[in-house]
Amino acid sequence: MNDPAVRILAVVERIPRGKVTTYGAVAARAGLPRRARLVGRVLSDLPAGSTVPWHRVVAAGGRIAFPQGAMARQEQIERLGREGVVASTGRVNLRLHGWQSPPEDLDRWLWEIGDEN
Image (cartoon, rainbow, N blue to C red; front, side):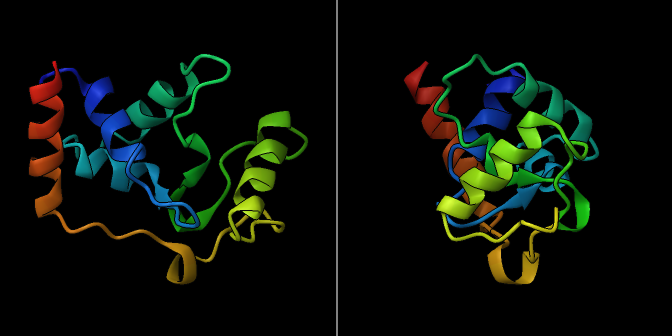
């Protein structure tokens, strides 16, 4: 499994409903430390109607990364709200809603995905 996009999406798809994590944490869990911007790029390239829960990924400190007034920002806040995650101020409380998967799960996830291909 060498495709970074597949690895990133595998991590994002496993973020539980009602939880969020950061771009940097997704990159690290995908085996791509310090590649948070790549995570953002991969998520921005998702086709319309994708079922990947991109809205569960936020910037460092729980901040919504989209600028004020952007439709994507409002959509992310609304989607998170439907899952019980309050982000009305443009920030999510990571202590309350942060997802911390055990690091050893990454290897299992990546092997499972590798078996599917």
